[in-house]
Amino acid sequence: MPAAPKDPRPCSIADALALVGEKYSLLVLREVCLGNGRFDQLVRNIGAPRDILATRLRRLVDAGILTKRAYSERPQRFEYRPTQAGLELEPVLLTLMAWGDRHLRTDHDRPMVIEHICGHELQPVVTCAVCGERARHEDLTPHPQAEGWTVAGPRA
Amino acid sequence: MPAAPKDPRPCSIADALALVGEKYSLLVLREVCLGNGRFDQLVRNIGAPRDILATRLRRLVDAGILTKRAYSERPQRFEYRPTQAGLELEPVLLTLMAWGDRHLRTDHDRPMVIEHICGHELQPVVTCAVCGERARHEDLTPHPQAEGWTVAGPRA
DNA sequence: ACCAGTCAGTAGGAAATTCCAACTCACCAT
DNA sequence: ATGGTGAGTTGGAATTTCCTACTGACTGGT
Image (cartoon, rainbow over all chains, first blue to last red; front, side):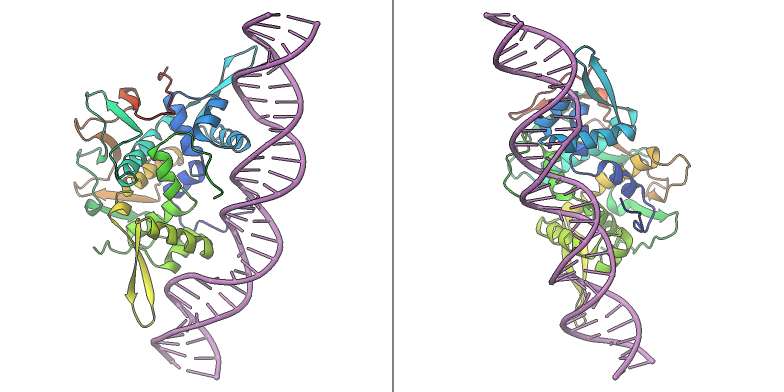
């Protein structure tokens, strides 16, 4: 990283992506959220090159998104697990999965279905925690707090 | 892309990321959702190299996530806008932003606050569309539908 | 003791991407 | 005629990825 004359506006989306937006990182999170946290499992399930995966894992651990735990001393063996911060990225994965299911598959065979505790298949939607209503594009008004932002009106 | 002996499991998250997971793509979406869809605006606001941005835009248009519209013939000038599919990625951005706000800023100055139509600041949470309850990790049970999946129990 | 196998990586070099500054082309304004 | 803007393209240097093979620590079988 040769200095950063970049990223002209402060943005939590950009900051988040700087951490977890690299190739494979979110797939690592998918796996660890499913409980598949061992190195070779990750290699197999994600299909990432081993060296790249090793780099990603280091970064995610450093960022406090994953922890590395030994599940066996003696043959030293490790397992990566999500921290609280890592678990809180699960909603991103759920939303992304729902989008992929809707837009990337014409047929109706989703590769994975998630059951909610309510007994039904989970259909993830993003809502406002205050009022409980869905967060529709047309119901949102962005208010930039920092310098460097210009926001054109929505203009349907 | 030299063939794909990769991606050992079918997954809508992986598929979605193959489309919008490349560097800058989601930031492009952030901008077009805000109404800032012109090339030089995108360059400035995102801080992406112009050639890379041009490549990303082509891909996103091809994928049906963006459209390219002329807002002026005669000096031919274009504007990129989200399609319906593109707009439906906004929840991903909202969720990611909320995560970044929570975990990447110790101070409490969010670079941008979004107001919901209910009158309060939007606090995006992912809920189950069926029962309306939050989708907590411990309330979810994954059911793989396709080959190639092994899911270890959650093991808190 | 010996051989095979697993896990968690590291090493080295080829291949693909990204980054950057400069350039084009079309048009408008002075 | 000169300068400026918008929307890119071009060429080469710098950075990342990808791939195959290798190591090292250990276990399990015979």
